[in-house]
Amino acid sequence: MGIILWNWTCLLALPLLAGILVRALLRKKRRAWIFTAGAAVLAVALVLWARTNPIPGNEGPALRALQAIFVTVGAGLTGLILRLNLRD
Image 1 (cartoon, one colour):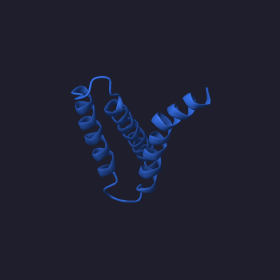
Image 2 (cartoon, helix red, strand yellow; image 1 turned 120 degrees about the horizontal axis):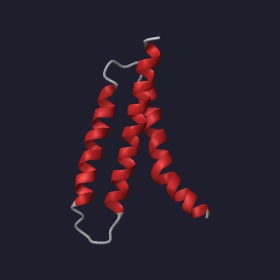
Image 3 (cartoon, one colour; image 1 turned 30 degrees about the horizontal axis):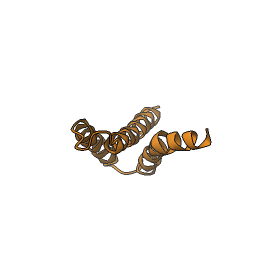
Image 4 (tube, one colour; image 1 turned 60 degrees about the vertical axis):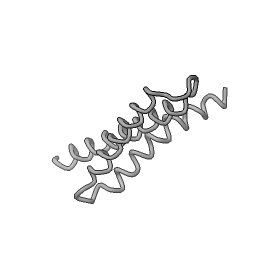
């Protein structure tokens, strides 16, 4: 059971936290949105790559795409929360 939790942590939680952390560290920069946009472009590219998987049964590209999606979600939500909090 412990290895399954560790796998899900590495797959979902750590990329989400990485996106949150990087976006929060860039909050004072004028062009912090570039990180989120770059992460989104990377996620789309990896999803397209995973859809045309060259090796049947290989789940590596799909897992990388899932990690990139969670980095994008973390960065996007953090940017949205920071933007909403700055206007108050």
